[in-house]
Image 1 (cartoon, rainbow, N blue to C red):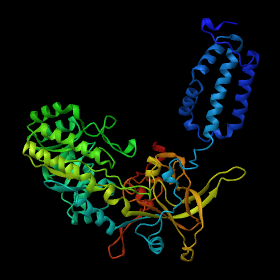
Image 2 (cartoon, rainbow, N blue to C red; image 1 turned 180 degrees about the vertical axis):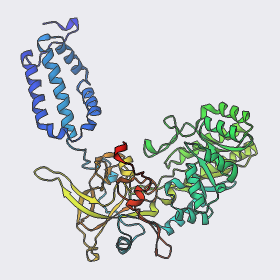
Image 3 (tube, helix red, strand yellow; image 1 turned 90 degrees about the horizontal axis):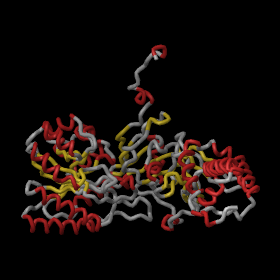
Image 4 (spheres, rainbow, N blue to C red; image 1 turned 135 degrees about the vertical axis):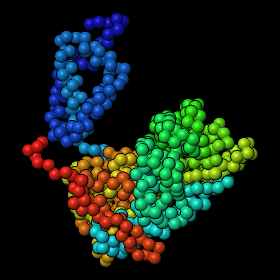
Length: 543
């Protein structure tokens, strides 16, 4: 046997004749025990196999052992076969079931307190279900007005414009309410600008920051007074070519981001939003080439609530304003103010965030003589907790038997209506409302995994926080088929991000609860005819 001195490692744990037998049998047994589960999630196998393989050879000792085995012809073939079987078996076992968070990873999430309804009563929920069916979105006008008033009181030194980020919830009734209160609007596409105009909002009250600048945006800028923030060098060049000598805004990526997850962080080197701050000289050159006047600087870093981060971003943004010169009259710091949806979460205090920003603006004025106006673009802050989805528990099932499993509630809603949990692992309060009012006082509870109605394993309403593929059973009031389940805090990025049409499910209706308590329908439920109206009938023989 070779000695350790020549670089080989002796196999002293098992006789070599038995090693391949042990590994092969172990692999075969594990494969046979897991083969049924392997077929369940075969689409994930490739990535998982790579992960498992890396784990198998992760340590130095394991690597050296495999190297030794591979040098001996008498066991090389058996070892390679066995290794492959082990990898396959481990993957098959891991693929049998999704991860389940028991107990919940973060102690903050382990509260045994049941979530409660925000602006609906149990009777309200039953009335909505009776009058409009389920699922139905409900918005609360009183909450919308209260949040708008908070935003309008954002601290500022020399003037404030609050722009509602309409992508959060673009229903015309919401736009009209905010327009009546003096808010302006932030749009993310020319289509959104047109939608606002349909609701009676003039394009001149809209600011466009978009990933896709199309010809219609240029038309709206030229003919309707739309303000555009150039989000790339090519956009700046396009506007300069089409409208030389015009006034423009510049959206910069200041190199700093903030967000609850990477998917809600729109600043820093991992984000494509805005012009990278190190390309400043190219911005100046293009503006000069087309005789453009840069009157506004825009930055938006994502969804966060750290006052210190906002202070730093405002300082960095003011530096960009100063380098551009006296032509800049407005600094837009975007939005992304964190909203606490769950009882254990906190919301951004706008006064706390705004105070140091105001100080920065005053210091800028002393230094440059320019009193900049401030713009902010809240979306989630204004509407998130002003929305609820009334759904029905249409079925229930359990996977508990000899082994512990899960108790599932199946809704007549899901990712078609509330995509955020499936996309981000976002948390939404869930409240069971008995169909029979006589059971409102019942105190019995149970843990449930709540799922949607789509034929999709990812249609999950109770993922672990920030982990959309991990089941996290939720303590709820004990539910029966026919009971209602209210998904709270769906005012932002729920109806707007609906995947309605998947499995041919219709778009849910939207209802507004007025300040007087009455319910007003603001969007009807879609029909199958509406879903199919743009399909073109063709003869199969022509295909």
